[in-house]
Image 1: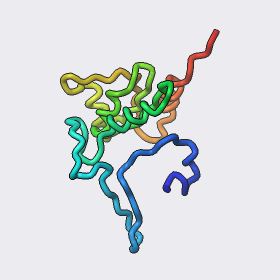
Image 2 (image 1 turned 180 degrees about the vertical axis):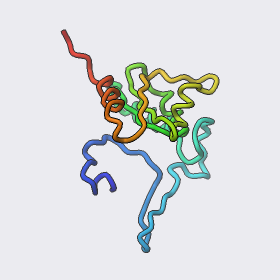
Image 3 (image 1 turned 90 degrees about the vertical axis):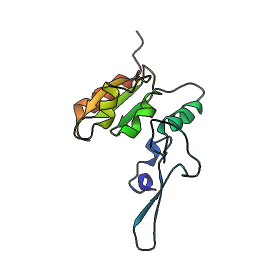
Image 4 (image 1 turned 120 degrees about the horizontal axis):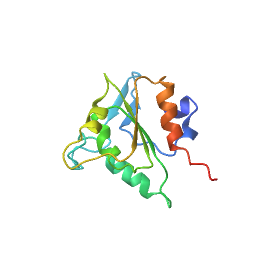
Length: 142
């Protein structure tokens, strides 16, 4: 409902997030995406949400796999980015919010990231974001 309120909902094909509602006092109440009584079992993710499972489910919904641009900053994003392909793009935030970037640079044993990685520092870091988006564009045919 937030994306609709600011007029950008049509720009997104899917949104997976923790549940949220506004209570009678006007406070935002957040609930876990994954019920604590039904753990997902992923060793890389927090108990409330396995983003890797979300990305795999989303990718499986396409007849032809799309190219993915993933923007992340936290360690909870690492599982999802291990599901990205070499043609995908990861926009990973730099310090001080760089838990994802640190894991990408030194992944836990047995894990790797295949996507092209572009670092950014702030939402208005136009050069890094533009480079990441440009890298995801289809290559022109001769």
